Image (cartoon, rainbow, N blue to C red; front, side):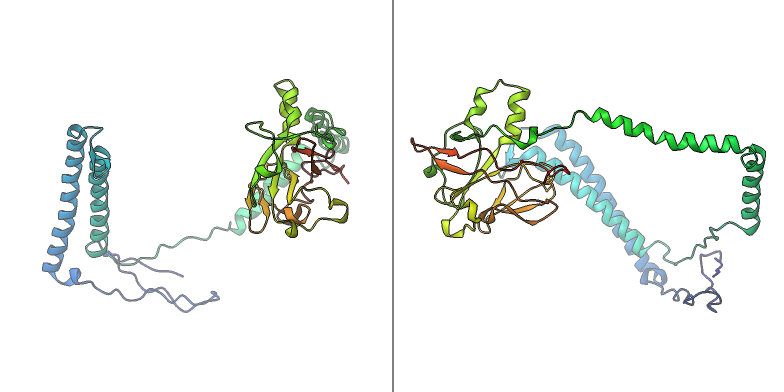
Amino acid sequence: MSSDLSSHGEVAIPDASGAGDPIPDPGLPPHEPRLTDVDEQAAKRAERQVATLFGLAALLIIAFVVAYLVVPRHAAFLGFGASNLALGSTLGLALLFIGVGAVQWARRLMDDHEIVEERHSSSSSEQDRAEAIAVVRQGADESGIGRRTLIRRTLIGAVATLGIAPIILLADLGPLPGNKSAHTIWRRGTRIANDVTFKLLRPEDLELGQLVNAVPLTLEDLPEGKERNNARAKASVILVRMEENQIRALPNRKNWGVGGILCYSKVCTHVGCPVNLYERVTRHVLCPCHQSTFDLADNGRVVFGPAARSLPQLPIMVDADGYLVAQSDFTEPVGPSYWERG
Ligand code: FES
């Protein structure tokens, strides 16, 4: 495809024979003159309109400066800060007028002939390619890598053993967790407390459809710092209340709840973010990190997202004083699914 530009930017329609192209180049349509191209008076009017817009913008900028200097900072106007209102409206309108003026200038007065800019082929010539191959071959000959087999083999061995270094560095990731992630501080009879106020929770504290973030009360017995934080990270739970007839508990979980209240780990089984975006109509809880969604009415089953296993459920009951307590620790590890977990 080729084209030429005349001194006025006129484009000669490119060769539309289509030779060698899968789709023939249709070329450019003929130029349609605008009113301002053929009517001097219309062009003058357009020029005055654009100049008026730019002039108004200049006046608004001056008004902006004046407003900055004279409008008191704490004065109010129609319930808004008068200073912000004056500064925002003058500067905003000034920018708007400059933009509209520039658009009108381009649309009505600037040359609107379409042009084609040719690009040369980006592939190398046959000669360049042949020269590049010759340079590589010459380099290989001069290095002697083809003749000196001892050097070639030891070099391959050195590069291959280089891969061992990053494997050794894996040791810096720290000791394997062992079975530490398999247990939390929940025990039979551990009372369940609000995770902010540490107020003990009774069944009547939860309304239908409510979700409460909670922790074991025994967390308070641990020394503040790393140990307590680690324990809290693993033992945090969510309590939800729903209609008892909405719960589809597995046969061995029939007595894991109290009057429609169920308790689940708060740690997402994908990569461990806290789940707590609860949708009370569907009884689904969503993890905000990658949108894994768990059905709390159905044993914490994954209904959407990358999590590979259900949200672990904590069996709960009511103690003699009427407080919600755990029946035991979790019966499975909480948190992300690793390869060592069944
Ligand atoms: S951590 Fe919850 S979905 Fe990824």
